[in-house]
Length: 71
Image 1 (cartoon, helix red, strand yellow):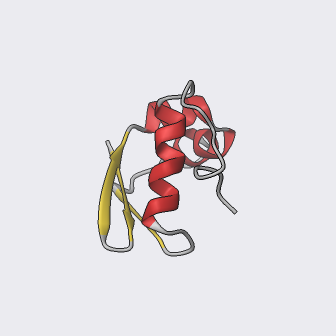
Image 2 (cartoon, rainbow, N blue to C red; image 1 turned 60 degrees about the vertical axis):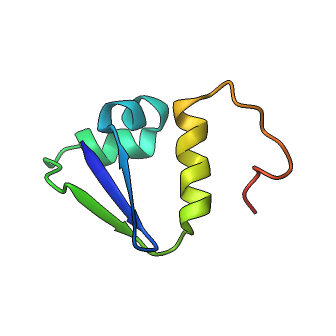
């Protein structure tokens, strides 16, 4: 129910799953003001990095390896 636009790529996600995994997203989506955005444009992260972060949120048992650690 939310779309992140990163480097022109649209990444679909669930506000409920993100809010459950992260206090940042909990405050963003369910904080004091009503969250109405359907698309969030991110400019300070690469699509590869953000995709890796989403994959780790959606699959917390995924092994963290040197190649998946963000610098």
